[in-house]
Amino acid sequence: MCLAVPARITKIEGDLAKVDFGSYVNQEVNVALVEAKEGDYVLVHAGYAIQVLDKKEAEETLQLWNELLKMEELNT
Figure 1 (cartoon, one colour):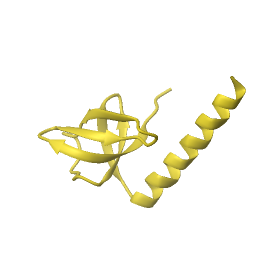
Figure 2 (cartoon, rainbow, N blue to C red):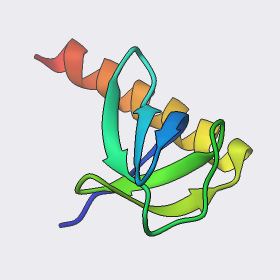
Figure 3 (cartoon, one colour):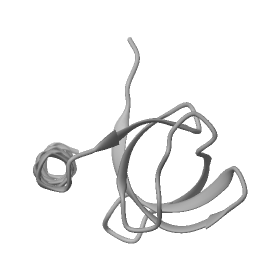
Figure 4 (cartoon, rainbow, N blue to C red):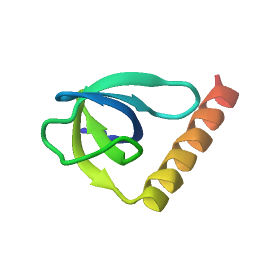
């Protein structure tokens, strides 16, 4: 199964960008496959931004992820 997660770009340097997945989870990803700018939301899979997302859609998806993570914490 493949999984891609939305993240907000906080800084771009060449083909690499710092992205924020929420809850203070930051990572560097390759943005060579998309035309994105700082502040955009992108869908990230295997270290690559594969699609630029609508802000509202991305924020709703991140909210769902946070809810799932909280549920998982309660069950462990």
